[in-house]
Image 1 (cartoon, rainbow, N blue to C red):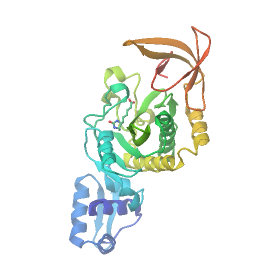
Image 2: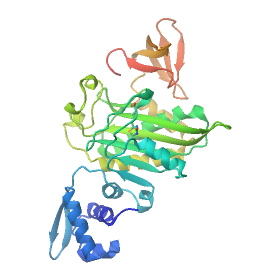
Image 3: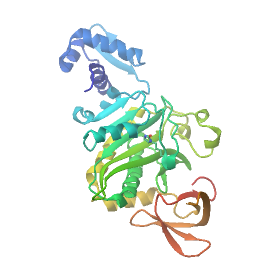
Image 4: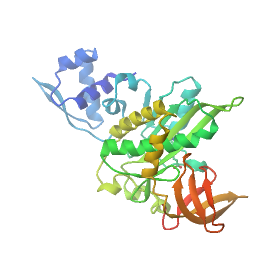
Length: 336
Ligand code: BTN
């Protein structure tokens, strides 16, 4: 349930004029004293709120904070009832998985300002500092088998590109299979985790985890990631971008994905192909054989109908379809 403070913040964000104390207390169904205390608490969080004796309250400045009030300003109250916003958590995927186990419905969302044990693909960790990134997990309960999971991950990459475009008007690209890039460096990773029903092989719950580097500065990345990772801010004049607005835009795009699955296959495939910058490039594919990573070089030709990558390898000259999960792909000239 959103608090009085959250709901008042949403009202302030959506109002271009002063809101009188009386209107606020009536709309929120609380006393004037409760409105006053919400104002004081919001000011402590860094929100600029002007108060004028005759006119009431108006928002004059807004920090980049991820809280339920600033996300809820862009979503309905009904939608927000399935959204949990936390200041810190080990992993939003783990928290969301727990909710799924307790019967949470499709569309349940967990967002955190910071993760202490953020998980990446292939058992790696995902560095998730506070105050700069967006870490979001979305629960889906698709009626499909295990083989479809990688397609949902590809649809998600499209949904993230679209949310960034909706919200900030900025273009991003997809590096096969599901990294998002700006200027050829990674701004977002996606980790999808599923639990299955053993007998039927169908998916019980699917947790789509998305980590976006929004406002990191160059110094926030360790040296070994300098050539690989970047943030939306770094690539766009070091401006500060509002993470709450991106969170809301992403939830809308993920809702559209979940309701369109699997029927909108052609639409997502077309959009994936347009955003994908792996095709047409020389690549090296790494397959782990007995613990050793063995690169094979070739040319990435196209994205097949099932989102696999068609590659003509130099050694055999034949075309092979790479499925996500079995290989990782690097560009021969840089990360892409
Ligand atoms: C990758 O690029 O390796 C995938 C990174 C996925 C990170 C996100 S952040 C939100 C969600 N919670 C996690 O623990 N991981 C995913």
